[in-house]
Length: 178
Image (cartoon, rainbow, N blue to C red):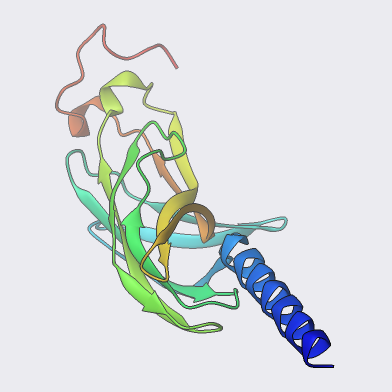
């Protein structure tokens, strides 16, 4: 009888440990929502096209756009958002440079601010533009496990390439026809 209880206890520990490893190995789930706000531009507007919400901002060459939104932990474990991951989705005019670090309990949420450097207008025609729809975030769980998680922004950020007068590094040959 004692031997069976010992075997049952060992089996229970193995199952619990395996379940803990499975939970720890599951990918963190983050979601983004409003309310949203922007700073670092002198004009901004929000509009909807079909099922997409677009936030149009005025481009400011060399400036930094600060986009604030609510980030939520949809997972079962607490986590810490350490900032941006090294590899980001490409964008011609927006270049992510920072994200507010924050600790999120399971089901918890907090406002974070994404910093985006604006540059590169001299490589696009005056009628072209660029979007940012998602960012890759570096997440830490338990002080040990780190993951890069893709977060879809609550709005698609868009800016247009300005005319030559507002793109100081453009030349007669730097911009394609458009």
